[in-house]
Amino acid sequence: MKVNITKIVTVITIVLFFSELSGQSENNVSTASDSSYVSLAVNFISDAVFFGRKDSISAPYLYPSLTYNHKSGLYTSGSFSYLTKSNQNRIDLFLISGGYQFTSKKFDGDISVTKYFFNDDSYNVISEVEADITGLFSYDFEVLNLALASSAYFNSNSSSDFLLALETSHDFVSNNEKLQISPTAGLYLGSQNFYEQYYINNRFGNGQRQGKGQGSGGTGDVTTTSVIMDESKKFEVLAIEFSLPMWYVHESLIFTFLPVYVLPQNSSALTVDTEVYEEDLKDTFYFVLGVSYRF
Image (cartoon, rainbow, N blue to C red; front, side, top):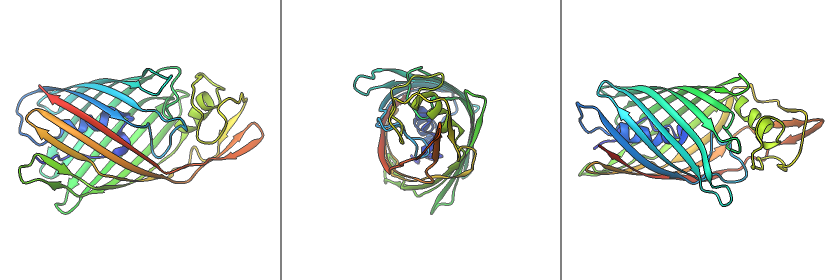
C-alpha cells in the first residue's frame, strides 16, 4: 500500500473544503481496482483554517462524506460539516463535488468542481465562497513528491480568487505496506477577495450574514458602512505550512491523521469607515482525524 496522493493541505476545503483531503486520501490508495466502488468517511478537524486565515473563535467540524468512484476515474461526493463548538452546534456547511482522477506511471491528477452551501450563521472564513474549480497534480520523484494545486474560487458578490499551492513531501512506507507517513512542507499563494467578503458580511455584520465570529482583527460587534481590504486583490504569499500526514490501511478501512502547523504571511490592512486596522495573524496548529470504509 503506497498512498499516492496529492496532499494539498489547503484543500481541506475546505474546506474544503474539509472532505476533499479525506476524499483524496481514500480515493488514491493504490490498491488495484478494476471496478467502481463507494466509500464512506467520517472525519474531524479541530479548526477551520484556510490559507492561514481563520476566525478568532475556533471552528471544529465533524464531517461525514459519501463518495462514488467510477472505474473510469469519474467520481462524485457529498458531505456536510457539523460545527461542534459549544453553543454553536449546527450543520454549518453542505457541499457536493464531482471530478475526474487519473494516474500515469508516477504522475497523478485530479480535476474537480465543488458547490458550497453555508449556514447563514457561519463564521467560517470562506463562508462567502459559493463554488470552486480545482486542479491537483503530483509527481513522484522517488526521493521527493512534488505537488501543485490551482483553484478558482467564486464568491457571493460575483468576485473570484485564484489560489495556488505548492508542496513537497517524502513517503515513509512500512514493510507490510499498511502504514505510511509523509512529512510535507507547503507554500500557499493567492488573492483574498473571499476574505474581504468574510469581513464585510460576517465579521462586521454589515452584509448578508450575521455570523457569530469575532474575526482576527477586531471586536465582532461593530456596525459599519464601509469595509475595504487593500490587499484583497493582490496575488501574494498567504501561508507556509508544515504537516505530517499519516495513513493506516486495514482491509477496507483507512485511518488518517494529519497534524498541521501553519504560519500565515502578509497580514492585511482593513479600512473600516475611516479607521484603519492591521490584522493580527497568528501561527496555528490544527489537526484532522478520520476513518473511511470502501464498499
